[in-house]
Image (cartoon, rainbow, N blue to C red; front, side, top):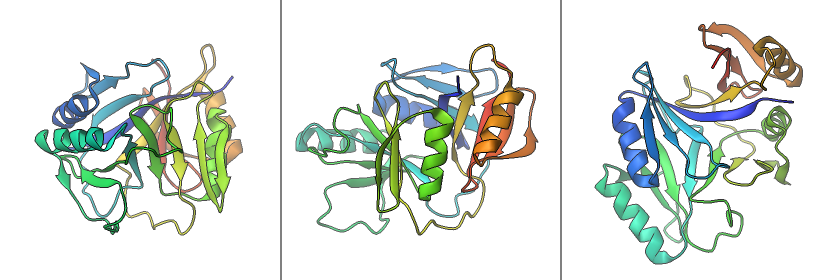
Length: 238
């Protein structure tokens, strides 16, 4: 037994407003938590929750992770872009070339995401959120494959990708060079230990795979770092 990926979390200056943007874009229902946090609930059991938590991290560069949204046709791609802009998103330039088919946008809090052109075979059958595309080394892809027990679905030229055995969104790492870390990541993973298992045992297992326990956290979560220094949390209690 191993931890499951309970949620992909956004630290946000205004969690409720950012959740409203993503709820409108994805068409997912939201539920409010006790600490001004908001969770979006995926319509598919294979989907991953998205949580928006209060944070004051200033953006100092591109995020180390972003969503790639899929399209079924050129018209569908245009409709997704138009919906994002109407909800408060904006076009941004991250160095993409004019001939590239994807559209790069940012949400109202400045978090980058892409709307991928139709016909992308790598993201076929993944759902609307085709991938969480991460900046990371090959080794960190191996770490998360072992940590979540998700199989590698891509491992070539130091680029890696994993996907749940149940399908759905892929998590990808682009390989070197990995951009230097300039602060606390705005996006991070929250893990839930297996039922009936103490969180301490799961923390020890993750350390054995290459993670670091920071010794920080609170009564509900332990804060850890993956081999690339990316923050993630392990639930202590539900």
